[in-house]
Amino acid sequence: MSDYFMNTYRRLSATFTHGEGAFLFDGTGKRWLDFTSGIAVNCLGHAYPALVKAISDQSARFNHVSNYYQSDVTERFAQKLVEACSGAGMKKVFLGNSGAEANETAFKIARKYSLKKYGPGRHAVVTLKRSFHGRTITALSATGQDKFHEDFGPFTEGFKYAAEGDIPALDRALDNTVAGLLLEAVQGETGVRPLDQTYLEAAAAFCAERDILLMFDEIQCGVGRTGAFLACEGFGIKPDVVTLAKGLAGGVPVGAALAGEKAADTLVIGDHGSTFGGNPLAAASGLVVLETVNNPGFLQEITRKGEKLRSVIRSWNKPNVKDVRGKGLMIGVDIEQDAWGILEKAFEKGVLLLSAGAKTLRFLPPYIISDEEIESGLRILEEIV
Ligand SMILES: Cc1ncc(COP(=O)(O)O)c(C=O)c1O
Image (tube, rainbow, N blue to C red; front, side, top):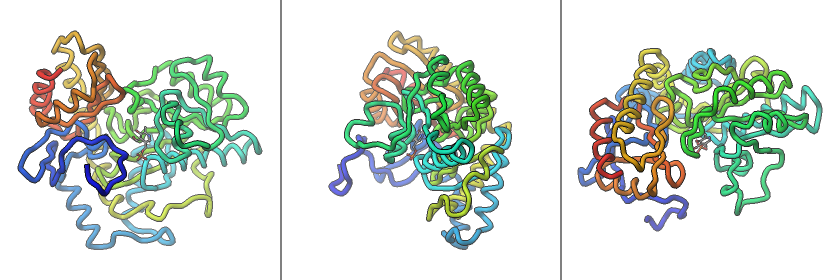
């Protein structure tokens, strides 16, 4: 552990020096197959040539202009991003730097939309008990899990938590104090759990009939991860607001809150801002991600590779593997073993893997991973599990 960092992360002992495709290397030449993509960030793997070129070309032009002006590359990125999300009804975007910041934007949109429509007193946002929405005080307030609420109160007022899958409870929670509902179509941090189709449809119907903003946190499950550009599209649901981050610029920090017809013009001049929001380097690399990922053939490959990964794990027939689930290349495997122990052993044998809870392994490989790489990584894991 370095003496210079606050001790906030449980880390494995590698200091990476470079990466290529689905592999990371340290200074001794040791390499690891990356089933994590830096937690769903490096969706095109490492050193993807078009990304390297776009970032270095852009850096030679400028790295930043303030939001007092526009830049050509950020304009193009915003246009392509809104177009990529237009199937889900999105019309406009606000760009920031992280997932938590994107969610903060969504909460501001919901509060203001509700204030303008209903007047004061109706500003609550409902989220789910197993949700994860980020680490700022307000994003933690939105996160339903108690373990995140222990040491950091008081929290932002105005969040209520509903139990996953319980439609009558959601019906009750969405009362006349509520401005918005925020859902992860596939809950990432809490075990890679896709929400139920009927639950999502009921949620959409409640929000539509009560004019509560339906918001999807697609920070982990968006940008092609589930095999649809937006996970909500895979469920046939059209939200009012979508938040994205992680994979959106393939490794350069970025966050985005998109809004559809109802709320696209809710925030106006002076309501919101972010110094780095719309950063040209993020926009340049984000354009490469959008051009590469948002096409049907590429998305089908994500689905196919995900099915392959899941079917190989199922074919192990290991009694301690209890469930294999997920969508596209977002996969959770419940296991009757300490997940962190497996992560450590896999790491020793050259495979990077994530957990999502004490007994769930999480796979978020880069979309460019090959079939052979999937097979070789899984052979190593089969021996460990
Ligand atoms: C679903 C979800 N929302 C929000 C966040 C927070 O994103 P960030 O760490 O970029 O603030 C995460 C991060 O893991 C996430 O998975």
